[in-house]
Amino acid sequence: MIEILQQIVNGVAIGGVYVLIALGLTTVFGILGIAHFAHGSVSMFGGYLTFFLVSGMGFPLLLAILVALLTGLVIGMAIEFLAYRPVRNANHINAFIVALGLTMMVEGLNLEFFGHEQVVIPTDLGRVFNIGGVTLPELRLYVILAAALLILAMTIFVEKTKTGQAIRAVAENRDAAILMGVNVNTIPLVVFAISTALGVCAGVMVGSLFAIAPGIGEGLVVKGFAVLILGGLGSIPGAVVGGLVLGITEALAAGFISSAYKDVIAFVVMITVLLVRPQGLMGKA
Image (tube, rainbow, N blue to C red; front, side, top):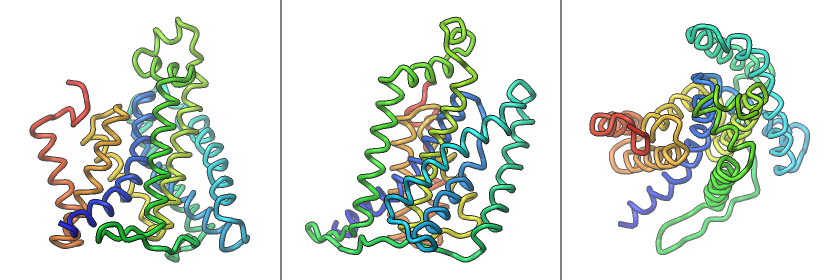
């Protein structure tokens, strides 16, 4: 039982990362119908930038994260304005090709600016807590708490603020939102800014918990889309539930079977859910 609880705790930490990636993807997909494949690479850029600021420039970790977040906000708005807005009214295949091109471009920029070495973001969070036989490293605890706070902040923003209501209105019915006075040119900028900021936070968490290396971004965005399908496309509660389910499943598979098969087992669970409930766990029929 202790080992099961240990793996669940580990799964909640990585599940929080998946949730942040999925939240960024679901907001973009829900508003614009764009599969933003470059999201994972942009997230890794945020992790790389944080590492560079801490290790290369001597920034305190929190300041480095803040700078990376602000940079992510600007990058997100630039991506929407320069890459996706010109193909907004074109065939969906155009946005698909743009997304693939952006992925390769951002990966190339990451290699050019930060190199091909695997890096880990240094932290001072080295303590380990023991709760009833379950070990909880301080870093994982902060990752879980940070992910929970970001999810809560995102939920409050979308549900309670006027901008969040405008985002939901555009997602439900773009034409009706225009008639109600919503600026549909500003909303995508806000959505991409928030999405990229969440991705940067996920990149920092990955870089602190594990490591950042070329190619990790693509794997992360695949997990993000798996979470969307598992939880239900366009559903924020679904992204939360799907991310935690996927993270815990992977941790249990790695702990009791083999880490080599954790991805396979996680996707088997996802496919099983879709066979029983095609709209996902929290999606609408």
